[in-house]
Image 1 (cartoon, rainbow, N blue to C red):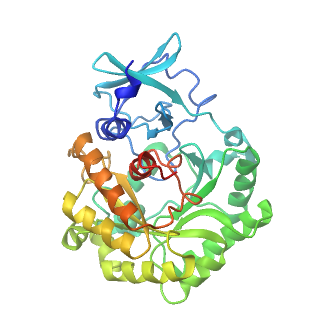
Image 2: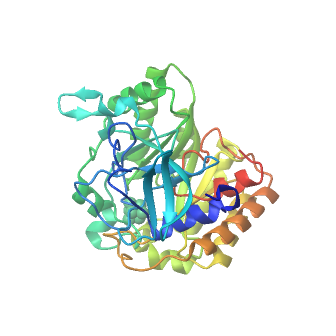
Length: 381
Ligand code: SF4
């Protein structure tokens, strides 16, 4: 196998947009020894697979983490060989791969009939993810973001609790950290009134801090855009970083792809929130979240440049058409396009000389984002 000559960023990008399959033998141990998908928020596969246990993500040589996006027609296949798992494309071997160990806390009971995995899940190798409420009001009016499948994912898998209590989140965080796997948290909720949301996040962070015995929690909260003094209240919860999901940089395209969200929050409101958040959290501890692959390279890179210039790091999730979203059946750009574009984004980020913020979010957290990998290629870890 030619590990050394493989461009891992291009390979990861292709796996994310073309999907992947695995043989039954390769899947042995997924859900018991290895971490399985639990659909805590969106369904990222290229097709639904209720009743089938699949890996959440896997690791390429050199430590690159890739989300497992199932596609039964993908040219990529994970097989089991004498020396472990390996990945092939069109029957030609590419490299060895490894599933990720399953956290022990997943099976612990919170109370009768409720397991910890229904509250929090590990993203990648070290990020403890909580969606504090799987709900978004834009769906009821048909104004959901065109790439989003939050509601159908919840209906198809019904695998997590839709609403999680702060104390349950605190208990799961304490158990997960005690296992030694977690380095940071990622918290988000679907769509809230901002007054209610800040109260929910305050209670959650208080529970995590109390149960862990710490003052500050490494990680990121991704709330709806805060107004007035809310950003200070988020900072005072003890979370170390905050992010805002602008989704699409080009504003007319943002309005077309995110009709409900853009009615509630304009780009200029997002940018005001980011500016204020940088003042309070510090440069590098604020994130602008973009969906990569739905807008031209030029406007995407313009967004990376503008956000970096404001002191915010960028998390660009790799878009592929998810089942249940309005864009199901469409095609994402090629893996090569993603690899080339994200390397240019990394150069822009490096020119900005921001603190990388890796104590709050790192390349091991994200199987669905390539920017950390492109920065790691340039020595930023
Ligand atoms: S705001 Fe958009 S991306 Fe977020 S949950 Fe609602 S529809 Fe989905």
